[in-house]
Length: 288
Image (cartoon, rainbow, N blue to C red; front, side):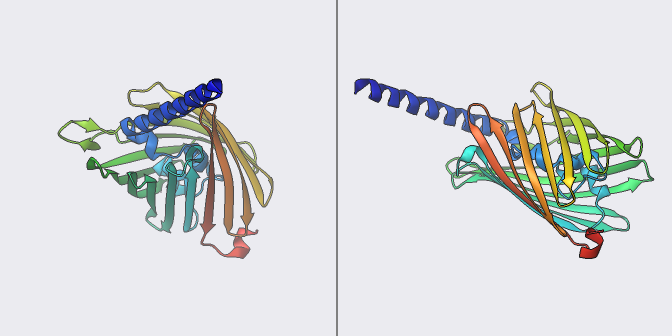
């Protein structure tokens, strides 16, 4: 009996330490918290023309230039199956003759700890080979017991269409500014990305990018997308920054698509997610 009680106490201590470590990591690295763990899944089409969608500009603002129709999407993630660690993202893309615009809204947390972000992006094509984009963000963190903090910052990116099927991109997140606490000189992390995407065929796309977050080792995100039938696709990859593989399946219903995805952490478990997209185009065009 004493042995069972001891084991119970050890397990409780282990999970408590894990929980505290996760929360501490979140408080110290706002950039990591703000982004979904399956963020690499949502932005997978950033280095492609065919695979790009309304979520792609989360990774690189320039990919917004490849949007062909007005579109909207929502994303929800339950991190490690914990109610307190829920992420919600809503995006919208709007095409115009002078370039495309994008809106992004993010929410993470629970009643005692919340992070929110609003972003406005713009991108356009410079000829047939180069796309450029920029996004301005307002970020806020709220901890009722300690107060609030906020920051305004920007991110920018460029895409190069090297050939009809090979694309390269560079982007920078918060290169300057973005200070949450001016008194303590607390700055949000800067993040730099560079990647390549290759459209092997109309059905198969692969990409890889290098990610360097300020004060952290560089990592790689490698992934693919395969549409084995017209109405269905699969996505999978691994991000060495957070050491988590991810995968998902998407099903199309005309102009609507729904994806079920998940990421896996060897110690903390899975983080299930759902993503929904809608293109505001005629159904007959979508089915051609």
